[in-house]
Amino acid sequence: MSALAQAIDTARPQMEMMKRIDFEISNYATRLKLGSTVITYCRVQMQLDTRHASDGSIPFGVNYRNIQSQEELKNIIWIREAYEITYLKLCIARAKRDLEILEKP
Image 1 (tube, rainbow, N blue to C red):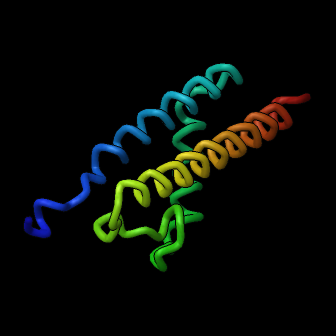
Image 2: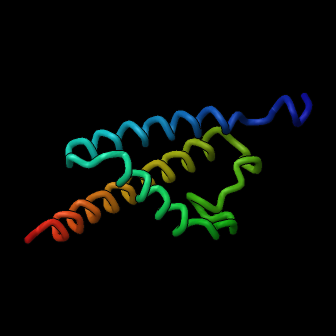
């Protein structure tokens, strides 16, 4: 069997992970009565905070083309999903707090 035939599909699990994250974060922001602009702000913040990760560290320094097994992919996806959800929830909560402070007379 060639190396190409043994390639691990990393795109589909990443897309599924992003859907789960989007669902969780959208519901969280809705519960806090915040719109998509706050989610976008927090996503940009996360991108800025993680943009230099290219050292192989999990969750953002991983080169998905180098993943060797389904188990490794599953672990990386689980860690990244947990990190992103937690990061975004914390950012959204801070944004809500800060916006409420700004709106006080």
